Length: 512
Image (cartoon, rainbow, N blue to C red; front, top):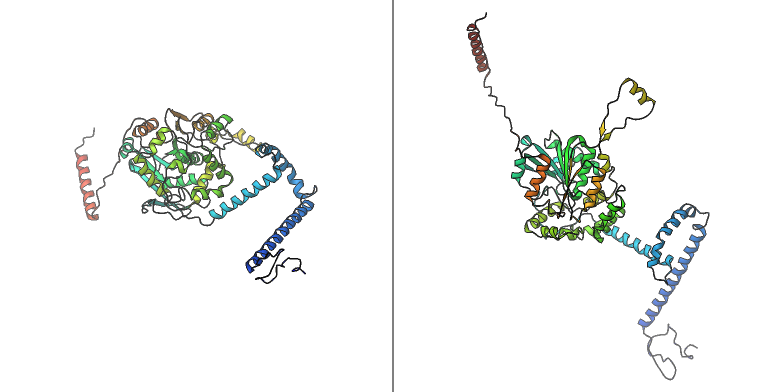
């Protein structure tokens, strides 16, 4: 019957069947038959998927989105408040688009992107470095910490027994123990009697990673290092850029071991709640969009950071620091990083920093910069220690007057800040000076982020003179020369000779 009407059934055997009106003929091949079935199957799956989605939607509406459901009762208020605050974003949508549908699609896409980033970042935590970045053989001196980790350090200047002043300098992000004070000469350190010690942060260079790293553990690493390298007196801490967060931690957690601190362009938490609106605006306005985005990821979605790190400084390629860290540099800073001596230093320091190829320490360091430090810089202000309240303390004060104890950091704090710095804007140092009035801030006109600290002998001399005064050289080492004792008989014979000399001298004395 189908053939009479001129229609060929899809199951008809394929070759030489006449079809159509007016003598038109076509051939139905096995390939066309397969495509027809595949198309119909896809349509059926699509229809079933749509109906399944509608069914799920109805189930959600009838069970979860009811007014008396747990989800609606507990989350309606917060969701409504959040939607009200974000309502202004609807202005950026096309007029013919439903906001509910549009933001649902955006949310799903964002969730998929985050899932992909997490999957790629967790696939392996160690990146195999290519040959473009040369890694030198390990040669660091290491100490064993109480928890079993090893800490690598580097020493410059005079020896420990002739040092007038000892400096310990933690390095900044994407750096290592080799940085210290870049370009400082050994003769200048010897002139001031300074011993400079730098070390690798956990997971950087040749130091072992720390499983539960925070700023307090960083301060304790510095304390254990001071004991291991024979620092018996108080020492100074040096901080530069984002490495200053470890300097702040030392002032907070081990103030009794710190003589003082001096920092150049010290970083503070950009999300610090005590910063006023002007300081916050001046800080964030200096940064590039990508740098702001990286800070946002470090604070909210740190699992996404490995995706970017593995494609920049952990890729094994060699590039400029301002590109990898999304820095906005001034003219003088750009001139510094293009010089040959800086390029040689940067290549060596970078290779040592990423020696282990592990992305986790860099993520930890980035998160420490923008997360809750566990203390505020204002805690370093000198103030009277709280004695407690209650009847017990009142009765105790009647019989014994309590001694007033001071808390905070009692030593000097020097800060040098370039007014043309776009990496750590001057607004951060202004904030520090506002909440720490005792800190001495030295403002440097026309100086950037690198120009005053890197390869500037005059600048290094000026800093040491400001902190330590005129150079006095190293301490004189006193050596007690004790003659060796060869034999007991010789000692007895020597004692007898001394007794005879004493008797003779007494006989020559006339008593009145």
